[in-house]
Picture (cartoon, rainbow, N blue to C red):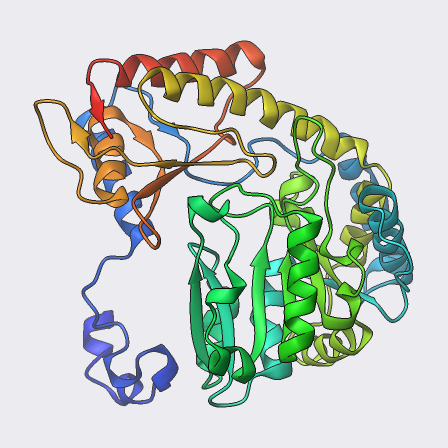
Length: 417
């Protein structure tokens, strides 16, 4: 039977309200990433002999370091690593605590009670609301941003209050803009720096402000930090946990996906407040049976070699420099971020003497369909598009070629801003 035929059976009426209830699957709206997927397919069909330059994926373009891969091979062959790992192995937790100290200057993290592994940071974000959210409780989210914590808050009957990230505030949330009644009702606040999609970085002063605000309103801070070690131009990696009082109010989520080219390996950790770590561990214990021990040991090897991330960051920094220069030569106001592999730029209003762009999505569709350059649009707080410097290119000369090709394709029009 087809999906349409099954929609006429009892299965259709049994879906939970949180995913649409009896109307699940009947929504005809086309979501952003599906629109991008369709536009890319259409562009490839219309221009089969032209390279599609994908600047939108946000996934590392290279394999994990050969030392990490070799460690996995050795550990995967050991019989003692075959079983369940549940809430993780001591070696990985110890490596995570040492990594926080060496790279982020975070002292005093107890690997036994203040660190637990996760199968990537996305599942951790999905599970954390189960530790705190009752029906009617509030999670504060920043937009644009990564919605998983908010999605699961809603699944549990909670509410989401959003705070816009605006250029005039350096893409940091204005905590003073959160109404008093919302702040007092909130259980969680989500932060993500360096930020996806804006590329913005936080400061120690901002994190100190967050700690004071969280203590005032009794709100747990969830700092999602998958890009924290990818910093440029003398910017030191910054952890929320390095700020005095941070461990009193929250936790930080780290992932090896972006900083170690280990997206498919699914390994990360939650660190910080021991009560939050314990609660997450209990919920996690009822969701999964832990990541493969050999992967945890390979990840521990990676954490013990932060120079791997430094080399990756150098590549992204170089690509950012080239992309920023190319876009600015075309009239954009691009600013190199201090961290992450994302470049967030305001969309033009149109083309001189030609079409208008009503939104970031409108401009992104133009780039894909007419210039075969794929980006991700964001219109949550103004019309922007996000470029990712994780495009496929083997070596510096190939990087230069790709960026030059972008510049060439866009140079036949004059954008208006």
